[in-house]
Image (cartoon, rainbow, N blue to C red; front, side, top):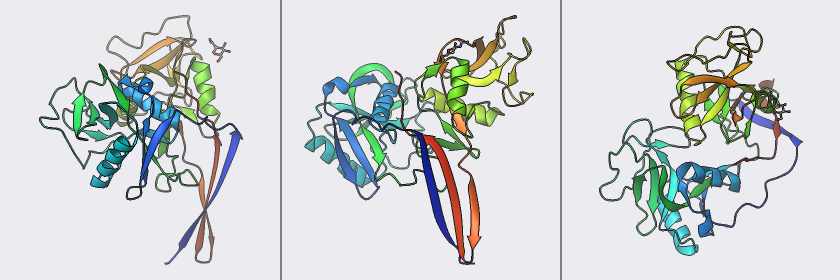
Amino acid sequence: MNERVVMLMFLICFASGLLPGGLGAYTQHNPATGFTFIVFESLADETNSWYDARAKCRIHSEYADLAEITAPSDVTTVENLLTNSQAASTSFWFGIYDHLSENAFKSLYDGSDITFEKWDGGRPKNDANKNCGTVVSSNSRWRDEACTGSKMRGVLCRMLTPIPPSSIDPNTGCRPTMVPFGGLCYDFRLLGIGNFSHARQACEAHPSGRMVVPNGQTEADFVHLYAMLTGQTDFWLGITDEYIDDDLRSIYGPDLSYDNWHATGSGVILLEIDCAYIDAVTGDWYTDNCGELKSIMCTVVPPSQGNLKFGSFVFRVVVELQSCNAKYYP
Ligand SMILES: *[C@@H]1O[C@H](CO)[C@@H](O)[C@H](O)[C@H]1NC(C)=O
C-alpha cells in the first residue's frame, strides 16, 4: 500500500523566552553532513574539563553539543573553521569518549561505536585515565586525554542546522535534545539542581514527564552512563519512603521492580523522609534527606502520535507541549 505520511505538528510553548544570543562564536557549516561547527571567540572560554565543554556548547544552543567528526568533509570544515576564526587554542575538546571500555570510543550523540577516526600518531594511548577526545589545531588529528584536570583547551561544538521545524526526530519521537531509550525520551541536560520535590515538579511540568525510576539493569546502566557523561555527580531518582518510613517505593507505583543500592544498603535514616539518588560516577544508588540539592533528570513519553487515515494519506498528529526556554544552572 502506498501511503503518504503527513506529519502535522503542533508545538505549543507554555513558557516563552528564547536563549540569549549565546557566547561570541565562529561557525562553519558542512552541507554534506548538515552540521554547523562552532568555536568560541575568547580564550576565556577555554576549559580543562570535557564535561564543562559540553555545558558550554549547550549554553550556546540547546541543540548544540560537543562536536563529532564523522567524515572527511567534517575534517575539512573544522580545518576551515580553525583557520578562518581567531580561535587561538592549540587543542579543542570534542564529543567522543571511551569511559566504558578502553579504546572503544563512542559517539556522544547516540552511544554507537565511532566509525570514522583521525588519530594522531601513537593515539589512542590505551590509558584508562584518558577517556575524552581532543583535536589538535595544528594537524586536526585526535588525541585521547584525561577528561578533567589536564590543560586548558578550546571547545568544538556542533549543531544540526537548520534545526528541523518540528524539533522532533520522526524516528524516535524524541526532541533532539533528548536521548531515546526503550521507547522513552530521557532528558539529561542539566535541568538544574533542586531538592526532591523541586525535581519532581520540574519533570512533571511536562504533561508526560516523570522522574526516572530504572526498572532493570539495562535501563539502570543506560541512566548511569548518560548521567556520568554530564559531569554532574548525583541525580535524584523517583524513589522515596515518604509514604511509609523505611519502605522505599517508586513514586509511580507500589513496587520497586529493580534496585541498585550500594553494597552497604540504601542508607535510609529512620523517622526521616528519604529519597533515592544515583551516584553518576559509580552508578550505585543511595538515599539522602529529600531536602538536599541534587541534579535533575527526567523522562517523557514520546509525544502522542495518533495516526489519522484519510484515503492514501496517513496524518501523524504530533502534539508536543514544551517549555521553550533552556535553563542552565552551573
Ligand atoms: C524544596 O525546594 C523548594 C524551592 O524549590 C522549597 O520551596 C521547598 O521548601 C523545598 N523543600 C524541602 C523539603 O526542602
